[in-house]
Length: 94
Image 1: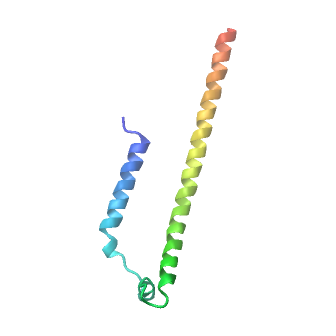
Image 2: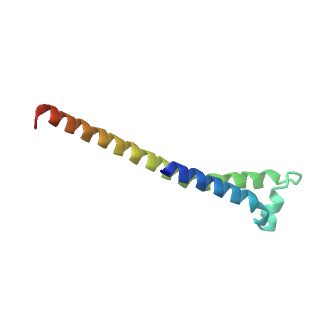
Image 3: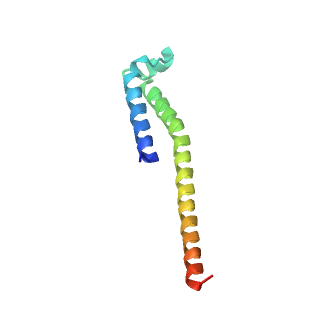
């Protein structure tokens, strides 16, 4: 039986492969493209701009992952609580 983790790993692998294969198709405006050239006077601006874009892309993903992990932990805690209640009721003969 395939788990959610298996599907997530496969999706991540496909996404990364797609990004690597299609990087030559990505276009930028001339000013942005020129700012990534380190030999120019404003070479660091383009790289810093690129890092902020990566941060903005990763932040929602990090938030979603954090929420999923918190919900999963709470669900596990609720299952354990229910298990202990049922075990206590069975031991008490209720």
